Image (tube, rainbow, N blue to C red; front, side, top):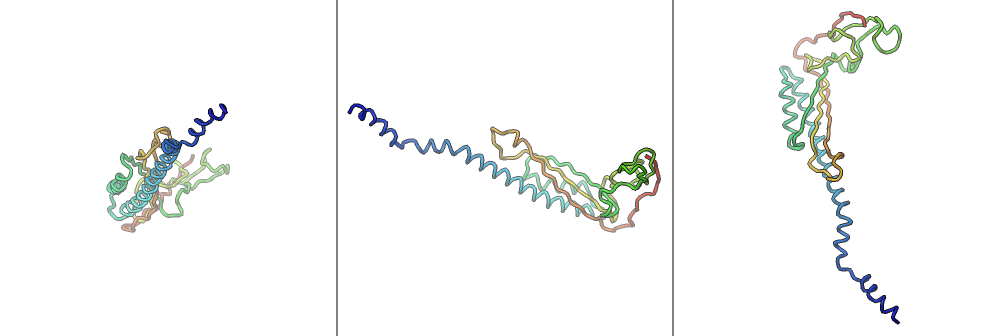
Length: 199
């Protein structure tokens, strides 16, 4: 009989549900907050990428017109993304080509040793007029009339939403967008140079 009397408090304790809600919340809250913050972080990133893509396309189009101002085009991109990515830093680059077929094409050369690189005195045509052989014939800048321009913008920003115990995963984000446009034919297009050289 004495043994059963000792079990009574244990049974009462097992049936007692006071404080269960707070314990369950303490167990579930970290996971819920992690999912919530992660979802908002991804939402900001996806929305930022979408706005960046639209801004880069618009800026590339503006810069392809006669008298296009590349500084104003870069500013347009910044103005559109700064509200979504506070503290954003932009890096932009433009590479121009004579035609779409020339994108990332090497300058023509006599690859005598068939190694894919201009070396050992092989002759080449300095098509972009920079005094050396290049594995990409493109010229840095916005090009001229009728040139094809690849405009790339990299945006680096600190995310608004982050998880305090995983700071390295939420330190910064880098998004990139590229637009390829052909400049309007507002003048005669300059062809590549035919100057010869040796590697």
